[in-house]
Amino acid sequence: MAARGDVDLTQAAGHLLARYAWAIDDRAYDELRDVFTPDVVADYGPFVCRGADEMVARMRDLHEGLRTTQHLVGSVLARLEPDGTATVRSHVRAVLVRGTGEWGRVEVAASYRDVMVSHGSGHRIAQRRVEGRWIAGERSILPWFHDRLSDEDARSAPAGAQSTSHDDRGV
Image 1 (cartoon, helix red, strand yellow):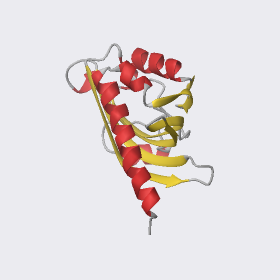
Image 2 (tube, one colour; image 1 turned 60 degrees about the vertical axis):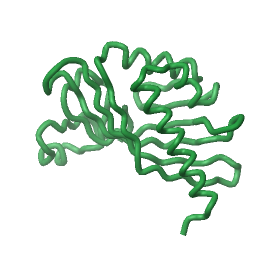
Image 3 (cartoon, helix red, strand yellow; image 1 turned 90 degrees about the vertical axis):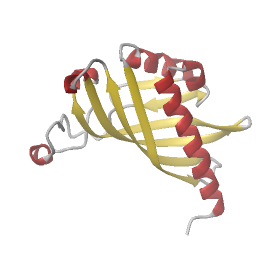
Image 4 (cartoon, helix red, strand yellow; image 1 turned 120 degrees about the vertical axis):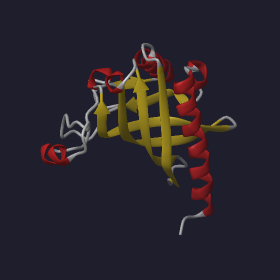
């Protein structure tokens, strides 16, 4: 059974991750900056952001040419660690739309592994590691995304799901 503190942390983490998703989708980059500590380290696999300013600049660059995006974050689970930080696991499913029709969009699924810390009157993400799960649609929108499907899994995957690597990090 989860301790009450873990339940409260999970609720706080869910709120923080919802703020992240809405900031990206609304292109509210000043609000996005407030989701991360100033010295955040975010490992997206092919690239690492060091600091909130770099994180915001990278997210702006990645989403700038898109018509719209939708990031859905769920399955949030937080646990208090002995050092006072919280480890947070969650899933994200994102649709990024560049144009119209099936070939104008890409859909990805990934997991976030975050370290959340108390900061001022709330919480912020101090560390992030992203694990890509799958990708479907127009791959050129996110050419660096690596999913977890093996070659054998890719052959039996639903139409549109593409395997790119055995590396389990991406987004």
